[in-house]
Length: 155
Length: 155
DNA sequence: ATGAGATTGATATAACGTATCTTAATTGGT
DNA sequence: ACCAATTAAGATACGTTATATCAATCTCAT
Ligand SMILES: [Zn+2]
Ligand SMILES: [Zn+2]
Ligand SMILES: [Zn+2]
Ligand SMILES: [Zn+2]
Image: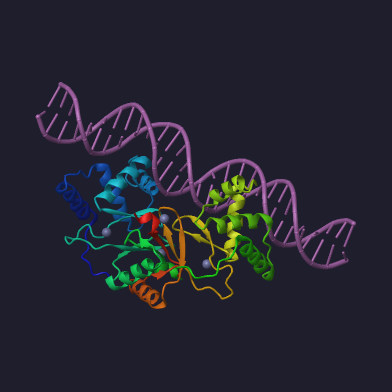
């Protein structure tokens, strides 16, 4: 089903570090720990959950307020996405891609917070934007988020 | 632009009261006050904002926790909709319609919380559901909500 | 080494929401 | 009209997400 090449967590982190370097920013140790949490979990996590993760799994205290700042940084580097709907964060699933990644949309499982990052076909997005424009509104962002159920949780 | 007949707040409240009666439920005074708040405001309001509204505009103390319960009731009667995205509530814009109202979608202005209740064309919804199904997910609800900007706020 | 700028820590506070227990109001049958 | 059962509402505590501020620390180029 998923035919993307599989990368290890450390490969993804290395790639992220180089990417930051190339942009003149720094993927510090703490930032790397937070990103690792998201990459490993494969599901959306809140800032507080990430603080717990650092404490419990990495044996490293990181106050929630620092996690928030770090998430802001990672988002500005396009390494993570903030999901407004779930109020949680996910690692971008394209950190290891070379191509510029398209505007993403997210399917968020309400049951387990598993997240699929997809790209909705341009035609569909165009129709949607038209429907919205028809009543005098406009989409605030093309990054749409949908409350979903994944295969496992839909039973 | 909006060609629906215009109803006064009290007409809408009367209609809501009769509707509840016909279903064997009660639109009590407090419930009516909360609904009035939403009908009058024409924009999405949080439970706490509605409690403030009752205190400041109606000179009537209503603790936030009661407002939550009342909103739950109103939602179960389909008189208000809870907007997950904004964490706010709106009066259903079809209280005075006789026809069974279609599955609604909501455009929520991030700037001013004005809300448009629309019905997305069936074809568009079908395409969207297919795209989602293709990756093994399913929409948790057909009541979609979109972060938008209204005409006034898009400047 | 030093000073500017970036990074992190610590604390307080706000907004939204749930859980639980208690009290009050309403309804329906006698 | 009266009592029991049900429904509605009040009160308190707590949980989660998030922002604001100020202080301390680290990094790097000069
Ligand atoms: Zn991405
Ligand atoms: Zn799931
Ligand atoms: Zn409606
Ligand atoms: Zn607006």
